[in-house]
Amino acid sequence: MAIERTFSIIKPNAVAQNVIGEIERRFEQAGLTIIAMKMLKLTREEAEGFYAEHKGKPFFAGLIDFMTSGPMIVQVLEGENAIHHNRELMGATDPAKAAPGTIRADFGSHEQVSANAVHGSDSPISAAREIRYFFTEDELFPH
Ligand code: DAT
Ligand code: MG
Image (cartoon, rainbow, N blue to C red; front, side):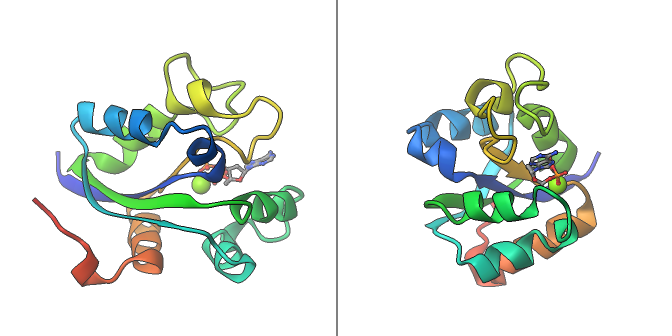
């Protein structure tokens, strides 16, 4: 299997819950390496551009409200099969339906799906686009 890169967000609700370290521990313990990271607060324009594929869906406005509500961590994870591996660690989109022990089951909101603690790219094309959206090449530090 190939070494891949994936884009990850620790969303505002998880940052507010003080579980950045716990989430990073899970990634590192699973063999994923953080090769870039920063903390930032998105503007509405940045959030809308990032989630452009969901424009027009009923949850879009609420998702943008939530993603601009506070600071978050954006980062790049590298490792074997990183895109799929990260999605497995995250669990299903709706925290109420995510498998026990996944990040979203443990730290996601059961009232608000958008506050599901983490984002992870869903394909190599998305990963490349999302990494480029937040990072320049010289901000990536592969081991
Ligand atoms: P994922 O983040 O698992 O890739 P997605 O790309 O379908 O899920 O949706 C992006 C985000 O939008 C998701 O993390 C939370 C929010 N979202 C998705 N479906 C939703 C729904 N039915 N109700 C409320 N928010 C939703
Ligand atoms: Mg998605």
